[in-house]
Length: 118
Image (cartoon, rainbow, N blue to C red; front, side, top):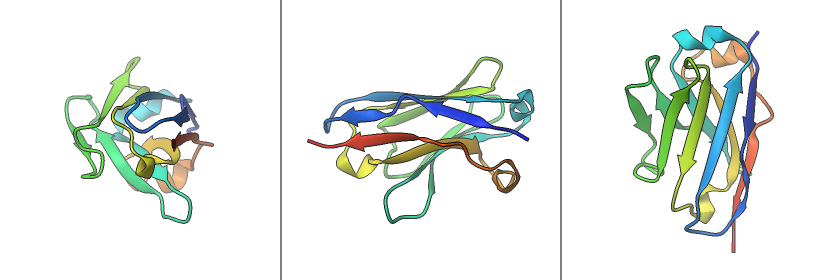
């Protein structure tokens, strides 16, 4: 069983930045593509950024493209999400997990809350 621990969320004003971090409990995550997801109040969880197994290829949702940067670290078992030019619509609980159906087996961590507000 894999567990993820997310951190780094907080309350910021529009236009500011945050850096989220995530660490997995087991090295098996090295062989999976990983991603950051978010779930806003009243909405379904969505994948906003993904990174390949070797960390060289990334993909982003259109809503965050050009503002968010995902990266893998520490032998590819840790993730970060650099979020710049934050908007109120970025407000959500952010989670890290695999990018794929394996998420249904691993389950979800507690996430970290990002609140973008004046």
